[in-house]
Length: 137
Image (cartoon, rainbow, N blue to C red; front, side, top):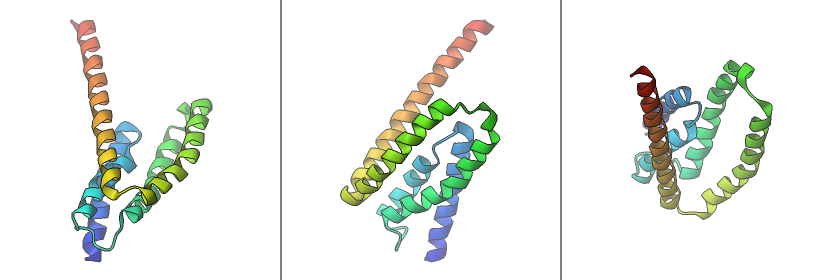
């Protein structure tokens, strides 16, 4: 049972790391998007949703730090500092939300964010492909 849970966490972390490396972010959304529904279906016994979020945050730190180190020469401090302040303010709100909201509500909201973001990125990709096609043709 514990080994199976560890396997699910490892597999979701691998997929989330791939997503993070390809897009530059998204580890948490992908990992929680995979593990959350598994937990809701009972496939991760003994691992409450709040613990999943905590584990995902811990696992995302080294991946993010590696990316920051790799891209450090391209990082502009002003926008990053704004994001850091927002993250520091948003983290307590997120933790409080985990304790106050039902898990299904949190998972539904996460699913909506993932779908909307994916649609936005696909739209941007489509526009980039159209612009490239105009240049080539």
